[in-house]
Image (tube, rainbow, N blue to C red):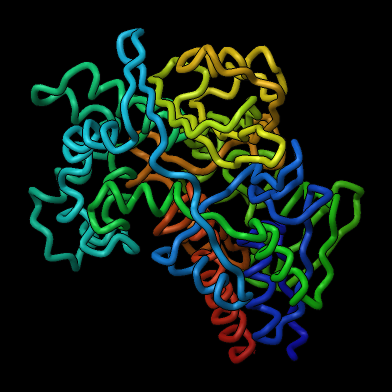
Length: 448
């Protein structure tokens, strides 16, 4: 056991795994969490008679980092409903069919959106590899990569003979997937998701919307916390981080000071404005904190009368863009989940809003309850899952990897692989960052 101490800000997946890894390596660790619970943007809570995921939900065996944790803690998974009755809105009209029929109509335009994914991401866990000086990528390919970052995810559909129905389906899909305005989201993120899914839309859907944890996300994050012997201070916001090449000092909201040899910040970009850094963080990070990501949307759970296998798509500016059945309760009701691009357009606790959402596909259905958590209005997240604006793929998240002395960043916002939409990226950064901290502190100890 070393006498060196590392402070970790945030007790979500990134913070908890970072603390566990550093603890295993023999460091003294202290975790500071602003909320009154652990889990961060993963939050399992019983509402409407069912354990619901208010944040992160789906997992998959092809997400390597979360699958390692599922294996470690002996958790199990089960599928979300499939083969639903599908309804999609185009030009104000509702079109209906089977889920497979709707998927078939998405295939052609999505293939256009994914175009270039193989060349751009030969290794999708190393997303900027073709831009490095030692890359063998041609100058033409590098220029195409940079240009794609200036295009929105929907811009590729302006080329070719895509119908309005195809465009509306993709608008709905990516309004939900990007959890923000699809016209502002970088096209490179969709192409990377495709590369992480063997360039197959069906596998991407399976990885991001198909399998849930039997015991919920809490089955993992509570198990990680139980492995920690270090303190986790809940309801303890950090207000200021003073850092140098030798040490850090945290100022807590109550005025207490905490000194450490290093700090790992796992706060999402949307909430980094709550922290004062001294000296100020380098390069473009302060402007990124002001700009934020493209993550402006919301997630709602709606309980309806009867058992219904339903899947709905509606393009922005619909309140909810993608809607699907998730649970069939013994009392004869169905709990559905929906995702929309603009949190300000939806009151997650309004039955009137819930009914309006249902009406755009099936006005015969009756909403009897609804719930959710507004992550964008939450001061400790300031956003939903991390999605990138145009230009931020090649000039954004990676700035948080640079050498900043004794301050480090981890979290899905800064992941190289699955960024935001699933928890895999948060764990990836925790593995990588904890080893970097240990390397740096070990080197410093040897020098002294």
